[in-house]
Length: 546
Image (cartoon, rainbow, N blue to C red):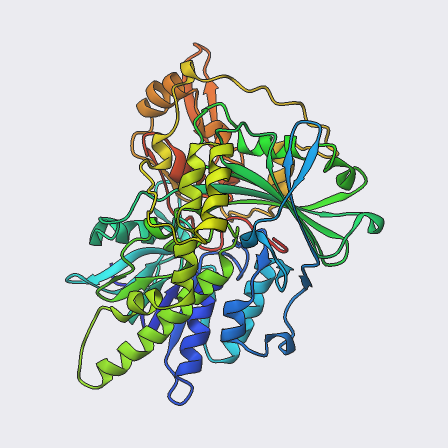
């Protein structure tokens, strides 16, 4: 197919904190002779697909924009109090707050609002940002990445052009930076094409589910941060909650569950709903109003699971690579720092190309990473997440020893052995879980929650973006018969259902118009039969305050 083509010095895939930071730093460095920089973003607007807790550690932001507080940033609330608690079904026991989780000097924010502000700042520096365009393929010249292709628009369910058909464009560049966030679809292709995960541990993930509430002013404690572990999860399942008071009577409340959980009957959404009924939590919500809902997977493997980050023609930054600091429960500042180092390395590489040297791989980027505070931070945190696979109490005990005795510099490194999709036990060996009915006051059914994501898919007749390698046999003979169809529970948007015909024969129903792009299905499906691909650009959730 002949496509229109545009040429840039640098193309960045993804307008999250990493992609925007990379663009800003490149624009700063090239101010005297501006580079042409393009960011494409699959969300309808910048921030539409962005979701995090979120407490911002400003270390990287201070380096990127030293006077950021004078640049009219969006709403941010300084943290005033940290609390860490262990929950039983009826009680809450306060625990010492580990040093990694202490938030003095940090800020509670909306990451979607923060990214919109960064985008505005980048545009003032001359960066081109194109929201509503999904990157669907990579352009190669021999083995070198030379650009990306944006998805076609106006295709019907069979992939045939409709009257409003618009072919995707080729965006070509001297370097392509992939900042797609957790489980990016093109990043997964790069891993395979260039064997980037050959020497890395399997990646491990969590699923974060979040709501935003407006609560009565007398209950609001601006700047208070609460994290909990324990109930409603058992001691063999990794996870916990966050409760952040910020803004004007706003409450961000959420739950994260490691996607290495074993019981196929576990339902992360229902665990979160159950958590909200705890006696220490429910009083905050009883006379309050829920205004936002969303979910997103997060990368938890740490240093051991980082892939090779460069290849001819490009590199990977932020959550697409996996720079989250698990014990801190933070990844914004680390994503931003990886992006700054990448931008500085790319800038130097482009100067070499202009000097009649023609290196195509930005090998300085990983070298600069390893000499940065980011690498040191991840090194100190490297053993915490794999230790928690031992169970709650052994994991906490080891974490205390690693933190207080070894200060993150133990003379060993634990490793991740299994991918999350290999962790499920058979349904016959697992205990079914019965969840309480929703009261539509504190707990809610999935449709009412998905409604708050402001989903839009334009023409629902667009091609399926959730691809099944085997559409009929595997979902029934393996997922249903062996694992009791876990996809009907781990999806926090009700995309997957098992339906029966008149002869009581089952089939898998995929409600693609419900998908909120969390990527849990792509990660957790036990046979890796489900592949998440971008739908038509601009489709999906439209988060406003997440």
